[in-house]
Amino acid sequence: MSKYGKEIFIGTTPVVIAFLIYMGVNIVPIVFMTAILGIFFYMSRARGGMGVGGSSERKSRSRPPVYMTFDDIGGQDRAKRELREALDFLIRADDIQRLGIRPLKGILLTGPPGTGKTLLAKAAAHYTNSVFLAASGSEFVEMYVGVGASRIRDLFKEARSRAAKDNKDSAIVFIDEIDVIGGKRDGGQHREYDQTLNQLLTEMDGIHTAQTPRVLVIAATNRKEMLDSALLRPGRFDRQIEVDLPDKKGRLHILRIHAKNKPLAEDVDLEIVARETFQFSGAQLESVMNEAAIYAMREEAEAISQKHLTLAVDKVMLGEKTDRESTQEERERVALHELGHAIAAEVLRPRSVAQVALSPRGKALGYVRHNPQQDQYLYTKEQIEHQIMIALGGAVAEEMFYGSRSTGSRNDFEQALGMVRTMMDAGLTRLGIVDREMATKERLMEENRAILEELTEATRKLLEERRPVFEQSLELLIREETLSGDEFRKLLQQCDKKSIA
Image 1 (cartoon, helix red, strand yellow):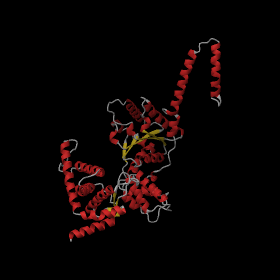
Image 2 (cartoon, rainbow, N blue to C red):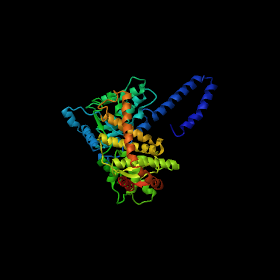
Image 3 (tube, rainbow, N blue to C red):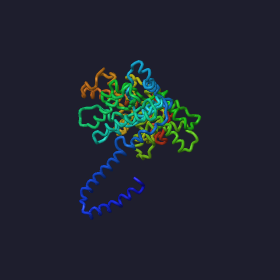
Image 4 (tube, rainbow, N blue to C red):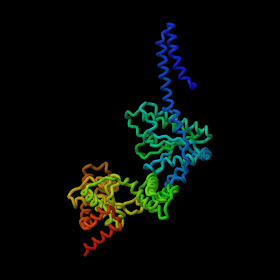
C-alpha cells in the first residue's frame, strides 16, 4: 500500500457507500463481508508478526551467535572433550558414510544452572562451521493446541533453509530448558505439551544420513530426571554430556578469563579466590569478578585488590550488606549464635575460621567465614558428623545463654537434616545399607532424631567447656562487628590454657 493509501481508502469508502444507497443497492451483505475480511486480514497480520514462524520470531532466532570457541570457555575440560568427539561425527561426513556409521541426531547437556551449557552449544556451532539457531522450551508452550508443534516444524525448516542459503553443510538447533516440552507423558490432559514433544520426536527421527544439510539438535536441562524416556533413547539424544560444577583448576581458568579485561593489583592472587569458591558455578565466578570491579569503582581505586575480591565472594555467597537495624538483644543473640558456629568449627577443624562477622548480609544477620579448604568429594562418617555439629553450634549456643532457640537457626537445621539424609543414603547410620523409600517413615524419623540428639549433646559439651570464650569474645565482637580468625584463635587458646591450668 502506498504512503497515503490508507487515508485514500478511508476517505473514499463513505462516498462509495452513499452512492450505493442512492442507487438503491442493499449494502448490508457488502458491509458484513467487508467486516469479516477485515477481521481475517488483521488476525493474519498479527499472527504473521508474532505467531508461529513469524517474522519477528525468525529475526530473533536468526540473529548470528556471539563468536565463541571452546578456548573461551573456562573449565569443563571433560565436557568439552566429550562434545568435540561427538561433533567430529558431524564434521567427518565422508568417514561416517564409508564406515556405515549412523550420524548423531542429538546431544543432551545436563548439569546445574550457570555451568556453561549454552556457551558450549555456541562453541559447537563455531567448531563445526554450522548455522546456529537457539530457542527456549518456553517458546513452544501456548494455550492453543498445535501451536507448539507448528513452531517445532518451523524451527527445523528454518534451520535447513538457512544452512542451504549460507552454503553450510550442517545446522545446529539449540533448545534450552528442554524439560519444559520434553517432560514425561503421564496420560494427563496436557495435550499441547504432548503434541509439541511428539513433533520434536518426529523431526529428530526425520534426520537421515543422506539428508543435506544435516541438522544436529543440542538441548540443555538441569532436570534430566524429568525428561520423557522416548527422548533419551538411542537414535535421538545419542550423547548425554554432564556439565558439572568446575573443580579448583577449572575455577582458576574461569577467573582468569573474566579478569582479562579488568585491571588487577599486584597483590591479587586468583588461586586464593579459586580455593574460596568451592562449588561455585561459572556464572557465579563471573559475578565475583564483576562485583569486585564494582567495589573498586565505589572506592575510586585504580585496580581491583584482593580485598575487593574477598568482599565480592561474600556478596555472591551471602548477598549484599543491608542497613537492617537490630536491637541490642538481637545483636547479642546473633553474636553468641555465630560464636557457637566459630568455636565448634575451630575445635573440630583447627585453623578453619577466617572471620566472625556481625554485619548483616542478605537474609543473614551474621556469618562465619571459613578459610579455603581443599576440594573434597568423599566424606567419612566422622567428617559429616563434624559438619553437623558445626551447623548445630549456633542453636546450642543460644540455648546455653537464653534457654531457647530462635528462627535464626532454620537454615542451620536444614543443612543438618540434609547431611543426615546423606549419611542414610550412604549407609553410615545404624540402619546400615537401606533404601529410604522402602523403610518406614517412623523408623527413619527415629534414626534421624537419635543422630541429631546425640550430636546436639556432643556439641553442647564441647561449647560448655569453652564458655569463657563466649564471655570474652561477645563484647569485642559487638563493638568491632568483626573478629579475624587470628584474633579469635588467640582468645580460644587463652581460655584453653586457663582451663588446663
